[in-house]
Image (cartoon, rainbow, N blue to C red):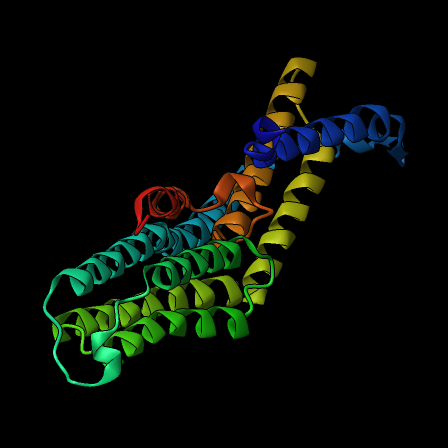
Length: 270
């Protein structure tokens, strides 16, 4: 199942190529217009310029979506780094001398509470990234929970550097997750998708009525061009939202956060 989910683009493109071949060879070859076969209406040499222009447009839009995707790839690692830093600041809070004379300053820090807070925050971030809705009312209150750790320390006279560090890493993490939210919610402009779909439709239609010098050239060129254009369209659609869980081929790698979660559960304040 994982093998298929990680290759959905190539499988869909292959299916599209087979469908176009089937339509051309089993339907269009049996149709004619004023004695002219549908599948021989135009010569390949007449439309090569259209294919060239279409590839150029697809290439431009692919380059545009790649910019956001490359930025998205950094986000899981940066979020994991900030979570790791917050964990280290908590360790510092346990080891550094505390100030203050209130009763709260004299009581021991609750390691079970702090461990559970970190696990809750990490689990919440992972669940939010894997969610289809990317609800802002879920992620931003969750990020504030790490500031609650800073408030907890401030009330108990913990080293100020630890408190400041937690707040700085929380703010950095908020920026990164806000960027992930923005990339996920703001899709490519709709007219650009309309252009891509129009080009795809025109290319497929032309292939159905194009004459080739031999049957082997017909099968090879028709299937190859169909496969390439469908693959490019699906790739651009997938790269446009790299946090979409349904696009297995183009999802960003969440391994940094997943592995941080494993380390957190296994050795943090146990």
